Length: 148
Picture 1 (cartoon, rainbow, N blue to C red):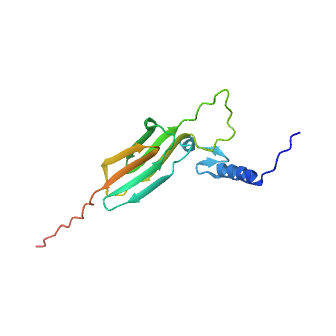
Picture 2: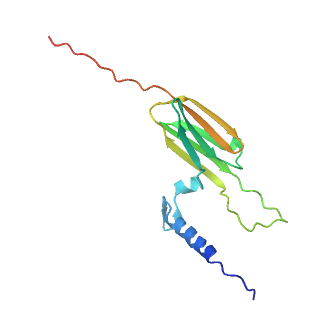
Picture 3: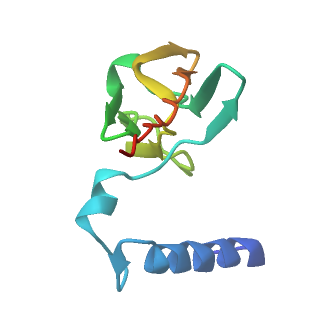
């Protein structure tokens, strides 16, 4: 029999992982819904605003540019894609895998003052940068009524 050192933190991490899987949105009794199967993880995102535009930066390390899709539909900006798991080689054994693999998705409701037809995207060193230009909101129109 091999003696192993007890690590209470590892046990705590296992309990937290099991708990998180059981209470995830879109799950019931620990079973994933169809929505959760479509997106296995969500990248970290920063959203900033200046006087002229909004800037969205999404961290996608290890994701190929060809595996990322950005789209706008019904005033919702969506970032979708997939990070592929490295193939396990015969002479290599994985002891721990903490990075997320599989499909990812993030969606954002766009403000009314965004020009949906002029969104600029750049992908460099695993960082997706989206620049959304602001447009002036249409001012409410006042119509005078003449009474006779």
